[in-house]
Length: 161
Image (cartoon, rainbow, N blue to C red; front, side, top):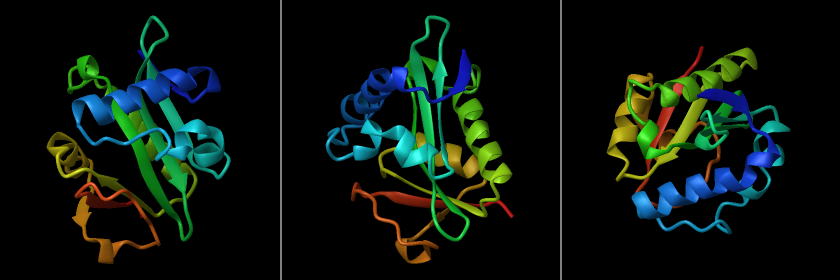
């Protein structure tokens, strides 16, 4: 397994992994049309100074994703953090490696804060974020204008400086 910067040749695998986890596992029912960033990852994440990373296995199959959108006032938004079920958990470390790529990039590019939204049903994700130093916040605490799909979402913030 290795982590690489997004390459458009993986676009269909990235979309398939994310939609599968969102809709078949988590029952969030989000369509591709509701997530236009997935059709243009370079423009939505990378060209603005953020980033998008994927984990691939030995057979060159996408097994994980994570994205960072750079926003105003030194704020970044973490999005599209997904890992295929067989690769979850501390023993394999896919989640940690993806997150560390994002965190290293955020620090190197002088971001001050990372925020994210996650569905209320994603309890395991909430625990991971707290373990990584994120604090749960309310919409009133958001440091920037940030809209997200209403999925009874929980909001988290991590201060980097």
